[in-house]
Length: 125
Image (tube, rainbow, N blue to C red):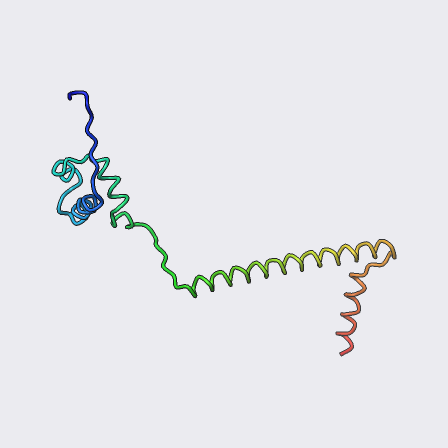
């Protein structure tokens, strides 16, 4: 009999009762450990698993279904706008490259020519 180890199994109701007594302040953790003959490590585990005070200090976000849907819709719109912006940048780069090639081929500075025409029109008015 001396070498045998006894393993205790506690019911869910018992665990919840002890946790609620600790959380309500009726007992401190070490007091409950001595009163119920349960190790403090087990009580810490029970508090983590069944306790409500472990939520203090954490942010819990509660949303309505339509809020979640709206958030998903806004994320899709953002992705679409980012894609359109990237395409616009590519188009600008392509057009600038085309102008540079044309300037080299025809030996004309198109950027200055366009600027001069715009300023003449403004002067005639």
